[in-house]
Image 1 (cartoon, rainbow, N blue to C red):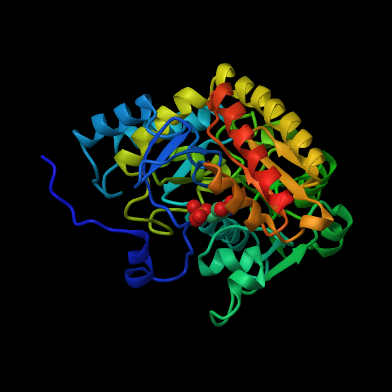
Image 2: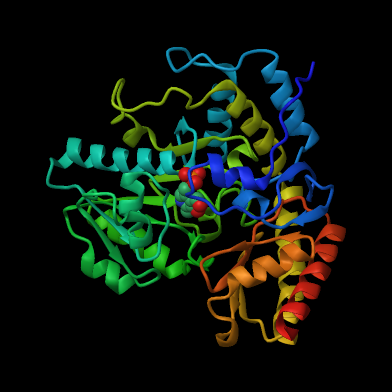
Length: 406
Ligand SMILES: Cc1ncc(COP(=O)(O)O)c(C=O)c1O
C-alpha cells in the first residue's frame, strides 16, 4: 500500500534543510544501472556513482533482492545481539583480505574514527600515554567528525569548531623523506589514502607506501590505509593495497561496501583487535542486518575476476577517450587514477573551473564529480556497460565543446 505524499521541489531545500550542502537544481527520483531520471522525467547518465558508492549502479537486481529479503526478516537488533548477515560479511572480508577481524559501523568517517581510536588504544596499552601522535598527509580527507577533520587537517573543514584533537601532524603526500623526518617513537599511527580521492585523485607511489610500512615497523607505529574511496573493487583489486603489495595494520572501508546502503568497516588483525575489548567502543546501528545483507551481495558480485578485470578494461576505455577530449579542447593536462576512480586535471586555462565542467556536463545529461576546483572526477558503477561509457563520453564531449567555445 502506498501512501500519497505531498509534492516537493528543489526550492524546499532552501527552506527546510540545514544549508551545509548546495545540491544541483534537479532532483533525481529513480535510477536503473547507470541511468538516473529526475522529477521531470529527464534521463541522465551517472558517472558520479553517488561519490564512488553505487558500485553496481542503481537498483541492481541482486542488491534489491538481498535488501528486500532481509527487510522481510529482521532489520535491527543492536549489538546486544549479533546477527547472521554481519557474521557472514565479516567472514567474507576476513577470507578476502589480510585481516582477521572486522568492526562494522555506518560511514567512512565512523570507520576512520574507529581506526584512529584503535591505534591510540593499542599504543596506550602497549607503550603508555606518551605514544599518541598520528601523522597524516597534507590535503587528505578522512571524514567530518571532529577527530577525522583534525586528522584530515584541511582548515576549510576543521577551522571554526573550537579546539581540535591534538597530537596530529601533516606531511606532504608521496614524500617519504618528510615522513621520515616527522615520525618518532611517539607516533602511534601513520594514515594514508592509497589514492587521495577528494583532493584530486592522486595515486601513491609504490616506494612511498613501502617506505611508510618500513618506517612504521621501525617506530612501532601502525599503518592505517583509508580505503573508504578506493575500496571494494574501485581500483580493479578488491582493495587498493593489493596493487601495491603493502599491507596495512588497519584498513577503513565504507562507500562502495554497501553499494548505496550506509555501512562502514574497519579490518584489522587479531593482535590489534583485542585492544578494543568489551565496552571500549561501539555504535547502535553498526553491523545491522540490512546493511550487512546488502554488503554481502555487493562482495559476492564485486570480488570476482569478471568484475575486477572489467574495471581494468573500463579504465582504459575511459582514459583513452578522456585524453582525446582533453587534448582536443585544451581542457585536461593529465588523466590519472586507477580502475574506475579517474581524475582529469584541468589545464592552466581552466584551473579552478571544475564546477563549470560539472555544470556543462549536467546540461548535456551527464553526472560527473569534482575533486577540488582543479580536477574533474569520474567514479561510475564498476559494471557500467560499454555502451553507456561511450554515450556518456559523447555527452561529455558535447559539454566540453560548448564550454570551451563559450
Ligand atoms: C578517503 C575518504 N575517507 C573518508 C571519507 C568519509 O566518508 P563518509 O562521508 O562516509 O563519512 C571519505 C568521503 O569522501 C573519503 O573519500
